[in-house]
Length: 451
Image (cartoon, rainbow, N blue to C red):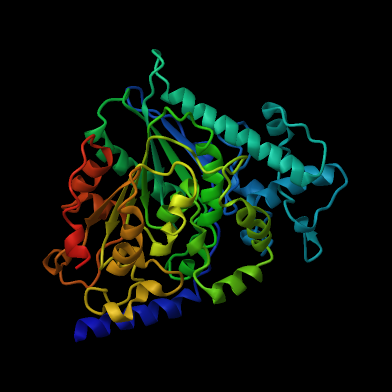
């Protein structure tokens, strides 16, 4: 049909143009400096910033200059592909006469423009002695503890009771300003279910989901970022008091990020043998997977311990992940007590601008460039996730089908992927009600999705 030809042509054009549009990392230094607390009378908003390796930015937890021009040595072509640790550690390493391997590229040291940040170490009480890697992990431990302490303090009422902490996690290809706008819209929706500033505390996660004007080149790359960031977020969440209720709202690849924070989601980590080879050839990222993710993804003790928390509810709006993300869900402690998954057969990003799975489920483009098919094909949820969690007495599972009738899409093949579009859809209220309400409705939509 003409509409299908148009869809195919759009995909070809987008892929062709993507070669002319570079993919880069998201950095947050200047954005951190520009943020201010919410107005008086509104619920507190805390912000956590992670680089692509899952490392916390020192700001705003401590006062250190991380403006973008200071972080990125101007004109150095390789810096976009380097994690925050490499950008920062090279400065104080050279002060001690060390030049770690990551600080050298083509004969030029990384971090030429990085200003002194020894004040961050001093503020956190981290001694600068030892190897740069040891100092870095001590710094990250201190930052995670300070972040968890800030969350715990904001959530604690004067009488000792706990406010609900609402954790918000964006998807890939979101620069900080766009993420902030979507978070503001979600906060307004949450206000309906937890009214008043005393009822909740918001914690907004910003992470390097890469950036590209077209988005397509990111699909293959971002899948290697969110597992590491999930492990970094885990380091903070596991330190938050277990009596603090946690409600998590994610969008797109923020879903698998949160999955890696709350359980061992490594079954879906690389998407297949070809991606495993590709990851191992990436010299800038493979060491973090080899040395940190692989040995610690299922930890129950230590800095990367899976949170053993009694009151976590996780709401995923079109999570960009396959069903095997849940394969090891019941292998560790705790885990979310309620999971709400929003799906959509026609989401333009989930099916990667291909033909909607409602038309051609046997040729699902959601499998390309890292599978996102849990949100587009019934097989992932009905054949993998539901059987695993259905009889779990500690976890309630619910599904919300956001797929719009064609008449609601103005004749287009695809549904808009943006958070705001989902908040405007007819089933948004049910999604948030299932996540926040005390009672739990029966799984009325599962039979239609799984038939």
